Amino acid sequence: TTQVIQSLKTLGKPSFVYGAGKHSKVTIFGATGFLGRYVASRLGQVKARVTMPNRGCELEIRHLKPMFSLGDCWFPFYNLRDENSVREAIGDSDVVINLVGKYYETKHLLRIVKPDGRKTRINFSCKDVNQNFPALLGKLSSEMGVRQLIHVSAMASDDQSRSDWARTKANGEVLVQKAFPGATIIRPAPLFGDEDRLLNWIAQTAINFRVLPLVEGGHRLMQPVWVQDVAEAIVGCVDNDWTDRSLNVEGKTIDLAGPHEYTWRELAEYVNEVKGYDSKFIDVPAHYAEMFGALYERFPVLNTQGPIYCKEDALRQQVDVVPDESRAAEGVLDFSHFGMKPTRIEDVAFNYLYRYRIGGHFVREKGYH
Image (spheres, rainbow, N blue to C red):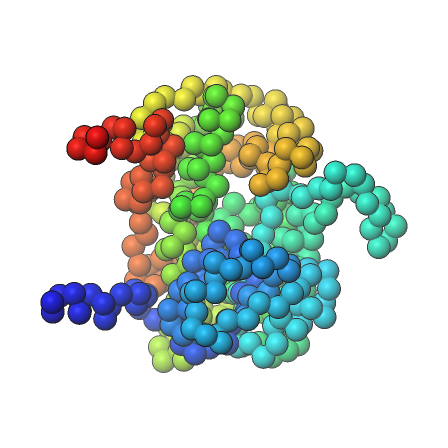
């Protein structure tokens, strides 16, 4: 009984060491996304009062409400292009966290006329979301006296990249720091977790196409990081009362990566092992992979949940996404700054990948039949 009571007392308490942001007023842009729900959950545990702007669909936010005490969360409507709605969403917040990002350009079925007279099928471009919006957010946060701005970019950001996503991510970092010099930039490696678009993508792509395309053999490296570790680090950045100035992350860049490197082929082999059957891999030249991705993403009717394969998928398989050790000398921080050890893929990925087994998990386990 004593053990049960003790377990109940500690249930739900966050494990991060500092930051915490207890009772802070926080606005999270992008709370409805993959990373956003984990950041929101952590802030709810520490009783922060959180504003989570959304684009107006109640179904997108209903899962976030149970994470907070009554009255501690608010869900105003906003539009990336409407400065007044963004300003209202920021309100009197002490901290603003930007998790908004886009890996492909959403499209209408038919061309529409933009306010400037242009006709296009593109709804929001990578430049709109990854570059212009962070700049606007930095400007408004500075004008409105926000104490801290945390902007989540990506470790693969590169202003010289052929990828629109990587290039606009890098430009967004520069613009947000120019508008808000004290902004904290967080650059995570590819994320894995229950709702990820990494291991789930490998499994689902192999099911949909019957084979898994690996660009140039899938030999490029990455260092995937668990989404809950990144969320914990973000909440650890939230400035409540910095009693130790060495822990201050104002104006800092933080690179967050997992403990081990993997190639795309190694990750695909691991997913095959968990699924219990072998999907065939095919080596695809980069040029043909980009052509197929660009074609496949052009059909909105096929992509109600987003394209399972797009040009950006082909481009991201052509670069290594691992921490640059030389950046530590430039003052770039990592998990060690928070006293954290990142989680291995093997420790958590099975819990959400076994559902891809033919016949389900229990077909292979004895004692259930």
